[in-house]
Length: 257
Length: 204
Image (cartoon, rainbow over all chains, first blue to last red; front, top):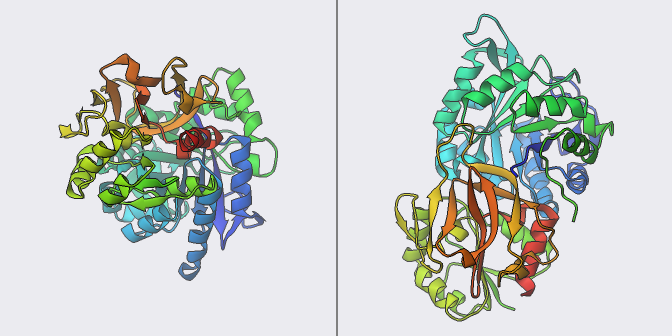
């Protein structure tokens, strides 16, 4: 049976994982390679690393992290943050990442999706989008860039459909309203986008309990759910989340060997 | 053992290489037909597109090298696109393939709610009576493996289907014929059970 994926997100700054609230926080919480291996052993299905290193000259650190992770874990993982050219994409893919994630840069230059898909295959190109409810938009949600700080004129649903046409292989929908609240994912926007596109949609922002994941994978029609702080602070292990989902009838991978 | 990983520009070989290093086996990556001829075992990995893959194989003389190798009886394994090009043809831009196993790589149907590519983890049922069942030694039935593909292997003869998977259609997740095995899934990205599949091939 085809399974819903649980993805753990690690924000990495200067080679260290920082606090999982992406739009604020900056407390170092651990070594990314060690944490990746721990989540791998817990049975996570995929990992995402966001490079939030501020200075461009320290970006090389992230490539080292990606290479070390690739030597330790044998599941897919993606890398995002600061990807603005085909060369940036090539560097992380050659370092061992399965996919690259583009966000603000794709809004500024949508051609990067098309070029990336043409060069590396559409399965390699993930569009990340930060969205917030806005009744002024045609479908009720507006796209933001620069870590949620800058509003764009893009309607979330229209942007998702356009990105699919351009060649994105997957879309991560991150709700600014829900992010960091731990009150649950934004089900409406997740479902709206997931039902409209023919590529997988990953829900992001707001996870606090395993029930939140069930709701977004079920009612929200997400193909995968991204978690960060709820696992980083040991509130729940990936195994506990999966056990809950399995009990609730959501198909998830068992990694017992 | 002289293991050769065939390089035909079909995607990134890095993940297969890191898995082989982790399993502590020596191997060579090569696009040289002579290296294929001298190998004890070959691995044909890859992601991407069937036509480009076949064109590169032909341009490097690797198509006849791989065909020749397959007749020696020595073990060979295809992964992902490598499980499609062992067939006779692919619907992906009407591509003639290697013809080592009768069958066709077909596109997933357009069906409501069926997202293509088939990307993610799916359970696999293998045929314990198959001559290739050794590939799944030590692996429980209905274990999950990682897939990324838009075309799937459709073998003409059921005895060549080593394992099955369902995604809109019931398709061959693994193939076998004589000394050839092939998986549509990525063992190098399928966690510890995937590594076990690779290990089974390496020690066979």
